[in-house]
Length: 224
Image (cartoon, rainbow, N blue to C red; front, side):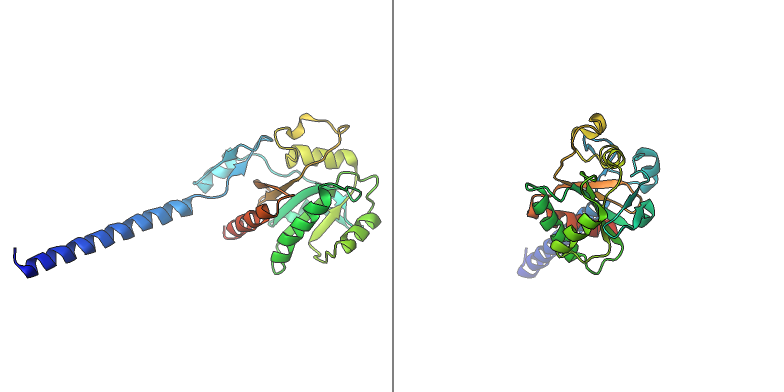
């Protein structure tokens, strides 16, 4: 085979290799696009991945139930505040000296990164609502230099908060609503909920590294 023939064959092989590589990348990108955040239907947080959006309504029955609580400004906050919006929920109490301060600091990382996102709501439910009155929560929010009007610190009936935490948010992983409202609720989890009030993520609120993952997941939900 003469020199030029060898040259042509070599060039053909290079073109074929490049084409194969581009085809592979294209397939990988399509697969990546198909992978979405999981849904959670049960308190053990078994992930459910759905690629066909038409199946969501039939396969994902669990949504956050209706609620109504007072925030730090004595404003009534209900499920209307989260309709069509992404929201993050956590459970704290103002006299907590262990994990709550760290959780609030870490949620501020998320909050500060979402300043221009008015369609995202943060809900911090008090698990000692008999202590955390609106005025106490207002001072707590001010003390932590939180100015976001979409970050609500909520108080109300202990039974209602605990029921919502355990039955709707599955706040205590692997336990869910197996506990009753007489047992104290204390969890480090942040729960990410999509615009349709379906749970899409759970994060350890004491770990700053998990906040970046939550921010990435929020971006994924915003693009849907």
